[in-house]
Amino acid sequence: MIRTMSEKENEISSPHEKPAVVSARINLAIIIGTILFPLIGIAMGFTYFRKDDPAAKKAGRNWLILGILMFIVNIVLVSTMK
Picture 1 (spheres, rainbow, N blue to C red):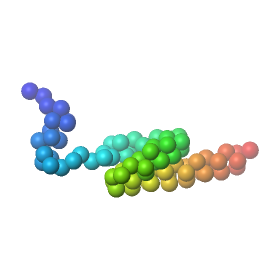
Picture 2: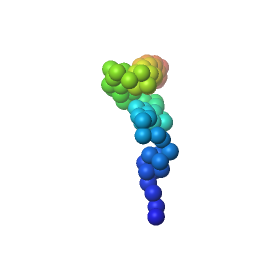
Picture 3: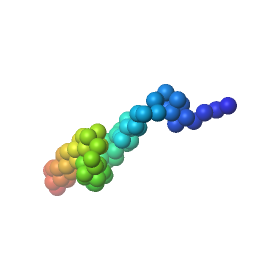
Picture 4: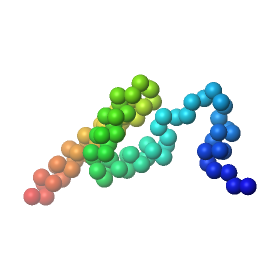
């Protein structure tokens, strides 16, 4: 019998633990997406920064900062290419 990843995670964690708001995979995907397209980080950062969970706020703040920095870097790179 083949079990899925979520079934394995459910066996490991206790029933009273709540799942992480931002998994490592989602965090990495948003960071890569933000580097390629800064508006992703700005939008996702703003969305998660408004949540009540402290872990979500931290992830949202990080994505928002990265998105703004990458946006500025893109502007600087485009202006120096002219």
